[in-house]
Length: 168
Image (tube, rainbow, N blue to C red; front, side, top):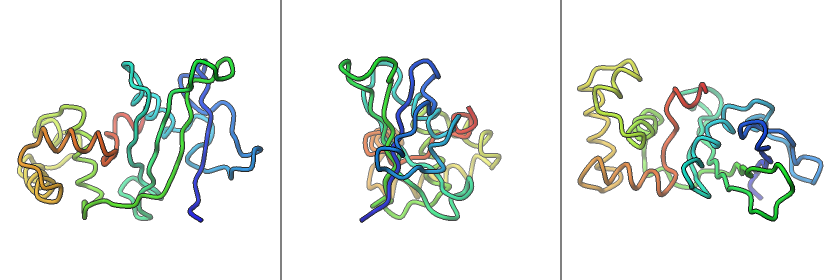
């Protein structure tokens, strides 16, 4: 059985972990601890009227030496206990389409609408390096444009949030 973590986010604490659900039989997960950057990114992803979102998070360190975990966040229904804003679920990643950790970071910035120059500045690489990453992303996702790559990445939760979001 695959391992996963579950956390409840409190509206009063800007979506960060307020109550762990480990006592209800689910194991606590280090990525869902108090003031978790994972939950901060999850909170940011469900803004603007979205009721659910999914993205990837690096395990072990920023460039994912231990791989990635899928983060799925769901806005709590109106019937939920008072103050409960959302639930976050960590689950294993099943398919990355051969994308590298760096390509997943580039996709995260693409989802946010960044230009090649902005992506290069954020990742501290040359614009040509970004263009090469994007060529590989388009090929691996089998899409003809960067816009379609961003749409697919957001729809499928196939990106790592940008470093600015990770450090929020």
